[in-house]
Image (tube, rainbow, N blue to C red):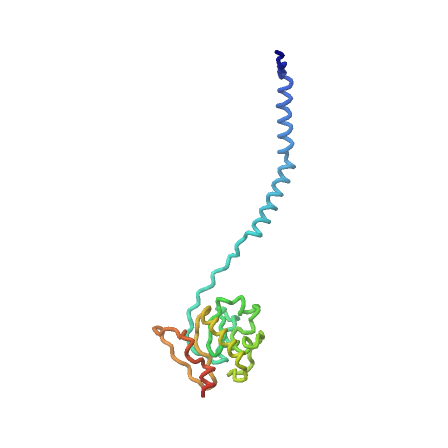
Amino acid sequence: MASVPETKLSDTDSSDAGSSFIDYFSEVFSPVNLIISAIICVFLYKIYSKFTKVPVDTPALELPKIRKDMTVSELRQYDGNQPDGRVLVAVNGWIFDVTRGRRFYGPGGPYAAFGGKDASRGLATFSVTSSDKEYDDLSDLNSIEMDSVKEWEAQFREKYELVGRLLKPGEEPRNYSDEEPEETDTSTNTPVEEKKEQ
């Protein structure tokens, strides 16, 4: 039977293998390659962190609740430009604290025109403008526009804190006590509906 001839590595072959490993190691881990690898890792980390970064919202200062009726001129003071940054918006005769949605209704927001104003007409007509009238009774809106205002009012009631009523000229404000529950019953007439019934 023929046997396969054995080949033995000579000492020179094993030293060549050892030196080739050292040569390979020194080429891969040369200072230039290490620097290039570090730069690539930094860039990959920056790209990864840019796309996976969770936006950190700064916690909004918890402002004390306001519970009072206001005139249009009093409402104008709450447009988000005052030091506390509070933003109030009136819809269908009710005033809501929309400070939580400051990025929308506050200065620089897409609906900043509504901040500190009665937004009813703008919401009814799908126009980002507010009424310039001292008090807008909305009597000239058609039934579809009034339905739209009522839908907006319902959305604001769900999402934002109710502050009080928007007062008509000559109307007296109501006194709210701390123990009194908020009026959230939408079946009651709004200040605008009360005027239409009279």
